[in-house]
Image (cartoon, rainbow over all chains, first blue to last red):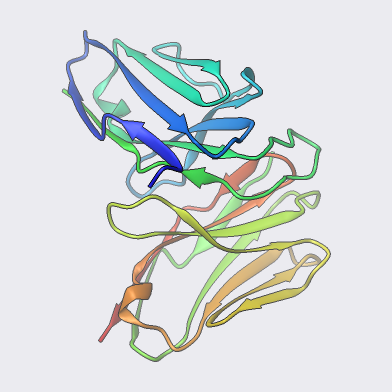
Length: 119
Length: 109
């Protein structure tokens, strides 16, 4: 499947490590997203990029640092994480991002996720 | 901001029965309401969506209803099959998608 791919699929890291999650979309979309999925909790939006510009940062701690070098690639750099950051991190893309107050433009296409465990 | 509540958190039905999942939202400006299905170990995928100018939408065995006055919308699955077993998420948006907590549906053969 060539829609939205994420690597690595599984990552175990210590609290002092630095690692990165990678997302790539082959759909020609203009918007990309990072979501955090924890057990028994709703999908939490972390960051939104539209045309490579960050348009949303939902009060995410600075130990998470996103990077969007072009409209097809999105990274999440991880540094000095805490055990409570262990979760499934999902990347998604959509054709466009409507932004607050604008009509949502439709379907999110998710990657398979990166399962992160912080020891 | 928008807040979405989803119920029930778990639902178990017998194969062939119907399943209903309900969501409420708080922001009357929300105008787009998708439903996503996430099978175990898989990515969430859109199964149906509805916009605020429509009260009901149907696609084979699944349907969604929207009551804008009451600010709630529901997913209906008829003639359930074991492959319908998954976690279902509702969401509401007036630009930014806010997801509900999810419903784990189990269809017993």
